[in-house]
Amino acid sequence: MVVMTRISETSGSTEIGSARHPALITEAQSSIEEQHRARVRKYMFIMSFRIPALVLAAISYSMWANPWIAMAIVGASIPLPWMAVLIANDRPPRSADEVSRFDGRVGQRKAVESRDHRVIDASED
Image (tube, rainbow, N blue to C red; front, top):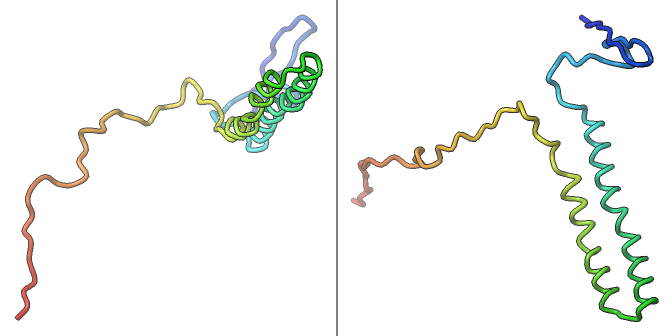
């Protein structure tokens, strides 16, 4: 079943439920391909600061002849690949209506029963 609705805009009307404007009728998450593209965009955005930081370090060293400023800029760019991988591999953000499964009753469950059990020792005859 496809839901067709008309919405008036400034340029005219558009049909929701058509190929250009699909109607959201499920609570399904975005596809794996869309999630992958979003992760690649995050990774590329963060890594795009790496080369300009190295160029900026070279320019600052040539302008002020101070290696400490250049090393500080290079040092700030060192954790960028690590951070980019961690951020890009993170799951999609949780939606507001997603149920939290944590109930907070950690101390109420016991891993081992508290009562004593009868122990049978093997005796050698």
